Image 1: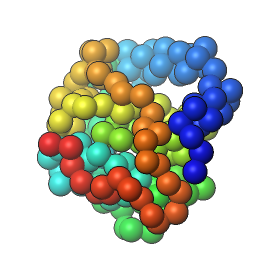
Image 2: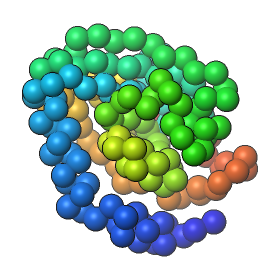
Image 3: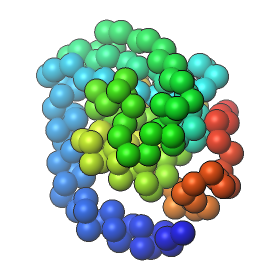
Image 4: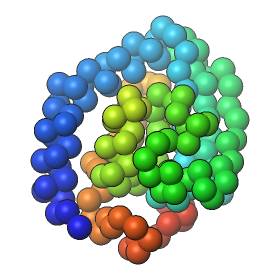
Length: 164
């Protein structure tokens, strides 16, 4: 298991602050101009799921000109969860621009960044409130969760649980 410092150093090396800032700026331009898709982990369909890797249900919001134009529920089979598909993103999630969740481990954060998807960790309780806050540029964000992360099946985080 890598320490949080080493993982942060690797992420900082691969994704310098100017690249992350550029991704955020680019996503804001997309919000105001073109369509984008935002996925929100929500295993119980009501609250934001704390562990994105094990989540099988995601609300997919389509954004057109800064407004929500569509919302649909995506239900993935177990073999397509982000944890199970540890090299490539599952097809239905490959077309998103941002992923909002209550927790995203360093490995998944890295994969999302490599795919050009903005990973967002938040304490917001509901998908609707999180997407609205994101679109308004006021979504509270948390840092990458380095605490107790393990690769493999011995997770110490409560997989598939909901924050609220």
